[in-house]
Structures are given as structure tokens and as C-alpha cells.
Length: 116
Image 1: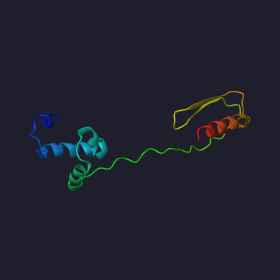
Image 2: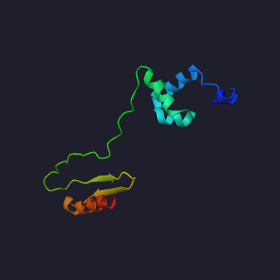
Image 3: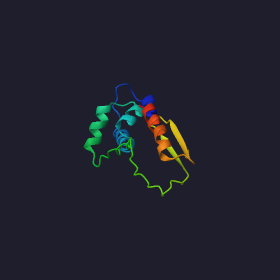
């Protein structure tokens, strides 16, 4: 902040800078704004809540998404690729050629157990 370098010690932050900080907090959240600008969390929170239209961050993405099973045609001759990704980024790629679902299921279970 240029203002910090030029202000007399003990001078309060000008209103226009607080307005800019509250606008930034509405977009990025209070925590990241406080960290970036090095201002008091509670002062910013108070000013933000006194203003109109406080936006909340969108809820976090779910950690688990259930996908319904797809029925295989009779005979199970479909080929394809199945990719499993754990939260830590570990991936398992299964190329389903001649292997049946019964043969792949133990691999999936082992992969899921390993990630716990």
C-alpha cells in the first residue's frame, strides 16, 4: 500500500481505502483480503457487515460424488476406460478389455482402501 509508506504514524486509514477493502472482501472473502492488505480482521468485518449486500462464498465442492452404475449389455463385451481419482490426486486407470466387472472390482476396492 502506497498510503502506508507516506502516512504520518498513527493516522487512520482513509474512508476510500476502507471502501476499496470492503469491495475486495466481497469478492475474495475477509480472510484473504486481510492477509493481502495487512489490516485488522474485525475492523474489516464490522465495516463489511455495516454495508449492504454482503456476499457469502459459494459452498465448497463435494468431496464425494456418487455416479449411478451403468448397466452393461448382455455378455459384458463392452470395452472402455475407467478413471478413479482420490482427493490427494492419486489416479487409477482401468482399461476394460477382456476383464469382467468381477475381475476389476477387487482392484477398485484395494485402490479405495489404500487412500484412507
